Length: 309
Image 1 (cartoon, rainbow, N blue to C red):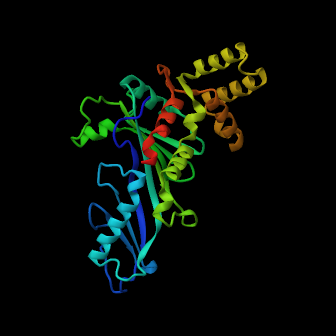
Image 2 (cartoon, rainbow, N blue to C red):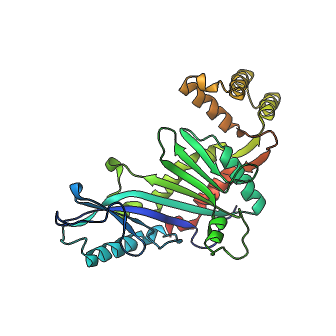
Image 3 (tube, rainbow, N blue to C red):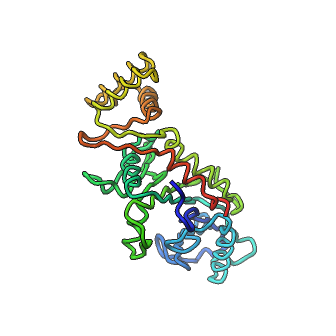
């Protein structure tokens, strides 16, 4: 799965926090308001903080990691010209959001298989939300933290998005551009303070950690529950799985089939789900059968030289 030609790796969206000396009577529009170059701002008077969110390379473009310092300086200059940053003490306090992405080009069949497998992949401590399914290949998948509504990562058909904006890549078909996006929100204690902390190697490490489940899963088979049980038996017969472990997994699959798996202790559920991931088994609808090597997709997303560009 070779990476797509062009700027396929970079930052799509980021959110910068600026400490400002704006006078207390300063009144900004409620909620978010338009600033400059497509950026939107939000003013927090009690903190003397201006939050600015947008696309460092402009809407629809990815900013290579090496160009982020230039983009940050350009934004700061614009804010000073607009009067939001007034003194030499007004400065960027850090980055609360950075969305690092990588787009991988595959053939249409492999792309559809990957999206179906990703929609069924059991990601630890996440709920999977797929859009465009219902008998069709989902075009967008989001992994939402189980303990809240925060989106941690996404996978989607980039060509579909481009076509809807009238900017599809010539010669590319639907599902030939699979984009993985690490939607990272940085809590205050671990927030990058300087743009140099957003260097390519660090963004790549964060991306690698976010999508590590794809590397662990490797070759994924999406099958009906009956076929999943049959697959476990096949692995025992082939000597690739011990009988005792197979007994535990079969028991878990039986409980899952009748909706009783939620009654197990959470740690037990996570342990059994991890076992199925390691075997590359995902359960789907009765007529659903898909095989995809997600480890290849993961490796191609990470191997692009543009992480260092």
